[in-house]
Image (cartoon, rainbow, N blue to C red; front, side):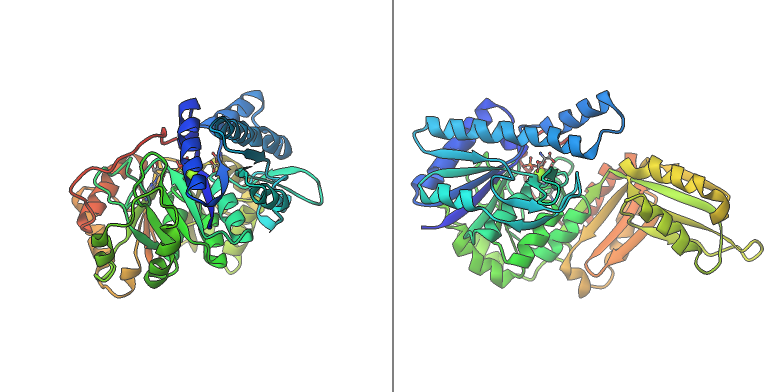
Length: 445
Ligand code: ADP
Ligand code: ASP
Ligand code: MG
């Protein structure tokens, strides 16, 4: 008997039909002889709708109350899902994050899991029931308050429970067949990856591929959780996320435990021996903005002063570019990107400190986007940036900023040319599939 953790995202439980469909699938896994723990997200776009609702009441909702509000979304889906399973004649019990022992720090809206004590979940499955846990939420022992884990955080709940309960596999069910070479909503010719290393997945997730939440990938990597990303709308095998190709092969046995799905196509196994492609995937992020601070005195400690101020606003900045200072003036310009939501606050903070920082002006631009290519093959293949930049140039797309890591190259482009850019780059690296990728549900919000 295996212990399988199954996480269903909002698009899989968007309406009553979706909940009933998912319930059947869970019951199938249980009836195949497995213990099943389910993590569920809020229905459809509930979380976004609740955020909009809060902002229509006040532009600055309290963090504590926001978490109280948002966790209601997962409470609705967990109880409905338990009801649907019970109606199929199988015992099910739903638990909030705190009932399931998800202990976090006290950071409202972006809490980190510090401990998992799933006593009641263990008890439920020992008694033969299916345990349903609300994703994306926990509680802090010090304050006794409810917290949320950041947008997309149900993935983290699932991985954390899988790690704490030593589950054989953690299945992430979503509205596409797995992790693709690009967002299939933007690049219809994207193809599904049978396997991706956790290192590459981390880079894709941090570059905007929301199919998996970055913290969940980190958690899975640290705790050696076998991750299988797949569709709740089809029975196809999805994508295995693992440290190495060899580990993925080992994990495949665990992943195959859920025999509700057909076994892996032998032709796919063949593929494992072929050399990995240079680029594994392309990711985009439309939720970034750029701030340029003009006329900063080029003196020691000025950048430190500026970025201390920015850090004080609790934002995480990404790319930074400092121009060469003009010899005549000794002044330089510093540009950086940050999440659009934090933009106005950071601009206001900079302007408040204009005198002590000694700069001329601040330019704010929220019409930019980030495009990244990711692949471990980059380490050993020269000319990757040349090919990337040429593909953009051929489309007449201007690059405004560049940053790189060991296995990633990111650029900033205009927001309105992003979709065109990502398709061109996808083609340039030979990633296009013959057919079109299927997107089963969701609104892409
Ligand atoms: P869920 O509701 O299941 O959590 P999400 O909307 O969070 O689903 O994530 C799934 C979506 O992620 C897909 O519908 C797809 O549009 C998007 N996505 C972005 N990049 C990728 C990628 N590389 N592979 C697959 N999906 C991707
Ligand atoms: N419902 C939450 C969100 O929309 C958590 C999740 O779906 O993972 O961000
Ligand atoms: Mg998600």
